[in-house]
Image 1 (spheres, rainbow, N blue to C red):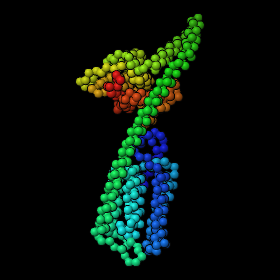
Image 2: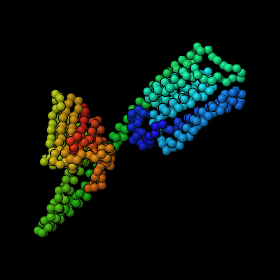
Image 3: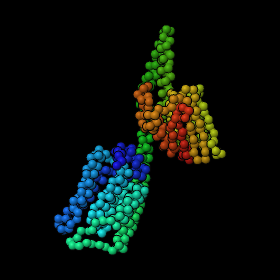
Image 4: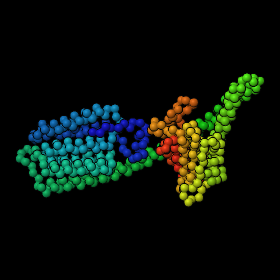
Length: 438
């Protein structure tokens, strides 16, 4: 059998729910098979010891023991696994059909009243597996039932043999197959509807969680802007005092430059925090006048563009014959592009390219640099927090790409992060036009 996979992690469970997949507990499957094996054993012992029928007891009990051995092995192998794969469940149900067919072969084939139990694995498959897997199991049951209608040992009775007319056997086989088809489709259809409803609910929950995360980030940003104000004021005052003292020390020119740089960076932090506090406490600029999207982006990123004037190549233009859309200032998009431009600045050798385009339905923003590109370990976890090749160095915490992905998704857009074929990192953002003025 195929190896089970572990989806005990919440993110994998959420992904499975959104994709409409059923989460299958292997321990439940083991328990169900124990119940089936116990019922088979009870029926065999009752027929042999209490009803005085004469089935091939040793052979039938041997088939049951094979199921017991397999179930013990399955229980041991999945003792640390919380979810199992659909392929493994299909193989397990196919084994159950074949094992039951073996017992029916020894005890009368389709003339045995318990042949109706061939429908049980089909019901389980239809409830948990997809349409194709259920169809495969229906075929297995159909082939098995057809063989049992022709090849089987006599049904053990008190005296003589019990032989049904061939036409009646054909009717039993037909009824069994019609029931299998009806039950498989009906149960699968209901289960599929249920899975789709669960997937929609899970997707809604993920969206709400993401929105809550964004709101929390906004609250933290406002708190940071407020709390860091006083320390920055203190740093600025002390830095200016040191600068005044050093003016009287002509031999400390290097130290003067360091203090000047410290004052500039403190002032830069003050500006950033003031913008952050303003944006968080502004209701998404609902009263701002709309402007062409390229002008809005250039206005929002003017400071960053000046900082990167020697590296940045800016391109704007329509990607089809549509007119340029109008937009309000979008703080989420501003912070996203600032973060991505900072990352590109850290790694670019000589060029950073920002291409802003639009179509009749979308806004396309492409950003690339000629640096070394993203490492394989970064791309493997792209969009996840604490994901950086510089984690812990120079204050980096690996949150830049995570914030970019989160903010773009909050705008209803999509973001692709990859490496160019010729080298260098690249990011492509697609936003729906209708979100620019909403």
